[in-house]
Structure formats: structure tokens, C-alpha cells
Image 1 (cartoon, rainbow, N blue to C red):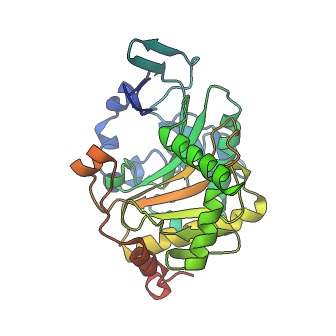
Image 2: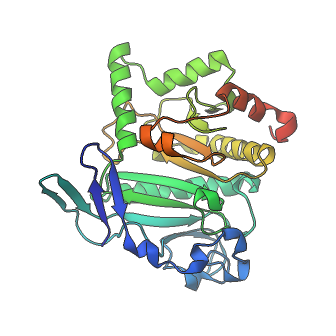
Image 3: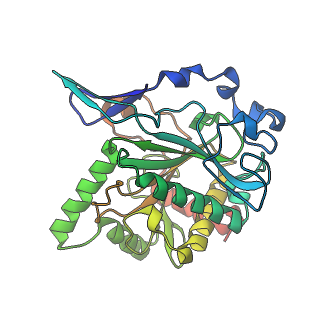
Length: 335
């Protein structure tokens, strides 16, 4: 059973999962080196994964070809779904047994695709699968937080090149989310009822210089204190606490702006490795002042001693410059 252990002093938790070290070498080498005929996420290889949790297909039996979205348990999970959550405290030592969920969302049957090149419909279906898994797992009271994330490229942690995202549900709310929620509450109280992310959207629209792209419902921007070169956030313009609350009307605009931003990064930075993750309210939905958003972070620099020692970041690209480069439609080739 995996285990989560708390830092002596801060609210940082570390997941210890020895099953992850048992992955065969093919899962540790570059995904680019995994040919389609050996890929567990391609048509005809459904037997190479655990039984599917969710699939979108017109007909045919479960765990067979014909799907266009498929969600399966991770074969080498960071956390295990079986069991009850037990917290242990002894002197300075705090731990929680590693109960959670770890799933893979296969975004397309096309082994060599990029998410930015998929059709609007396919990206909408990816987002719908995200939402469906959020809603389902939120009902499990053992899980306090659900993070969906994507690793693209070996440097970003991807062990397979086939387009896919992952989901991890945890029995503890991550420190980063609690810090954001606390800041949101502090801002709300200081301003007499204003959402800090809504204020960010309004202010960045007024200043314009850090806006990358926007449509009627969403905005993409280079944050004022971007930690990484070309870091980009996507936020709903309306106040929305939780990702899983996005409406049918928002599905197409969200798919299009996600494709747009990823396409700009792909074109301008020559298919960089990147991570994206969705920050949303904890599963108890008590943080109504939270405002969900995507964070997209290309992996163009290394996190070294200064960053690790201080939690400060050195970014060699000003966010205004990054936004200007990404905003240049003549180089991105996208609207």
C-alpha cells in the first residue's frame, strides 16, 4: 500500500509508492521510442491495460476497439483505490495510507496525434471525459482532491508518446490548492466580496499586454509572476468554482482556446515538453471563492538549487514578451 508522509514543519505531503519502481523499462524510456505496435493505448491492445472505467464508442463490447476516448486505471498507480483512509500521528511523524485513484484518459486512438491538432469535437470529448470522471470520483468521500494533468514529452514526465492525460484523486488537499484558497478568502474579505481571479481577468483585459488569446467565455494569459518561460493560464471569464461545473455552452469555447494555446506553443517553441493541470475547488465544494483554471507550463528550463532551496523561480523570459510572442498570429498560424 502506498503511503503519504507530511513534512515535519510545512504542510507539504510526499507520496511514497514503491509499485511505481516496478514499471518495466519500456515505461521508462522515451515515449518517442515506443512504436504503435507495442503501445498499450492503441487499437487492438486493449488487453494491455486494466479494464476500462469509461469509454466513448458507438457499439461493440467493452475493452475492444472502436472507441474514441478511453479511460483506464493506471497500471502502476501512485495511490490505490482499495481501503479506507487512516491517519497516523506519532511524535513528529504524520502519515496517511495511500488510498486514492490513479487513472489514464486516452485522448484519441491516433498514436501520433497532438492534442492541438485534434478536431474541436475530439477535444470537447476529452474535456467531457475529464468532467465525467471528476463528477464520479467526487462522490467518493475518501477523496478530498482530484487533479487532472497532462505530461507531454519525456522531459515533462511522459512515459508514452500516445496522447493521454492522467487523473489522481488524493485523501488530502494539496498545499498549493489550500494556499490559493486562503489567498482567495483573504482577497474576498479585503475587497468586500471580490474574487481574486475575476479581478485578474478584468485587470489583464484592461492592460492587454499579457493576454495571449481569448474568446467569449475564456481568456488565456501569461501570468504577471510567471514561474516558467511561456507559462500560460486559461481561466473562465465568469466566476466558476469547480471545473466539473462547466456547461455545454462552454464546452466548445474551452476546447478551442485550449487547442489554440497548445497550438501556439507547439508552433513557436517547436513542440516543447510541457505539463498542464487543472486547479479546481476541493471535492467538498466549500471553497466557493475559488475559481478553477488551467495552468500550462512548458519545460524549457531546469529547476535547480536556488529554486529548490527557496521556492523562488528564475524566469529568463518576461511574461509580457512571452505573451507578445504567443499572440503573434502570423507565427502561430492559429486564430
